[in-house]
Image (cartoon, rainbow, N blue to C red; front, top):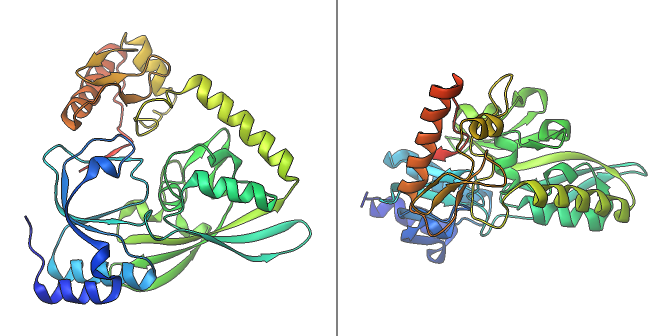
Length: 308
């Protein structure tokens, strides 16, 4: 296991507490695909100071690290991750209404807040604009980092500004324009920044009307997506001029199974953990899909999921 010096570990523990540090933590318990071996170190900071303390000390030690929220867009290999995982979903969540008038509200959301929980909260608050993301698996931090979108909505449409942490532990704020938001991309995609909080522009509306829109989107998702199985959501990015699911289906791979992993019978763009799959089976199936689609359709699919 990769070592962290006693000095660095003591510095981290002083800020986040011994109870928020674990060794050899199985990542299958922290990812939506429910696969993956142990991370050598696993940190669950509770505030910005704790996140900064972990990041700065890991940087100084030269320890590789990866930051997750709900682990919805990442697959850890079966042999595990010889580095540190910083999980924000466990202890760093919640929101605050910064300002509001008769028609609008500005809301700041911590990065570890799940999209579903935030959507439910906004329904109760009577604030609209986040409905499109209500069923996107994962957290606000991940949704911001990848400019998540669905059903004609994208995070870039509602982001006002984002509070980020750089690799030196400095807190910086970037506006919507400065975040370089495009399809599945943001300033964070290039590395070097961690989302701390996302500030959103939302509109006031009747809670019942917001709930009705969320219910409609949920029904559409349930009809078309294999939500009953562990997955990372859409496995592949949308190729320009094509739809990944159609390319895969037209290649005869819809329902194709490899061990416990399967191309969904409901939506071919989803690779699912059908029956206690290993990470290796999932990854081998992803590569087989890419190879087959390239051979039969002449299009190279790009995996949307991060593999560690």
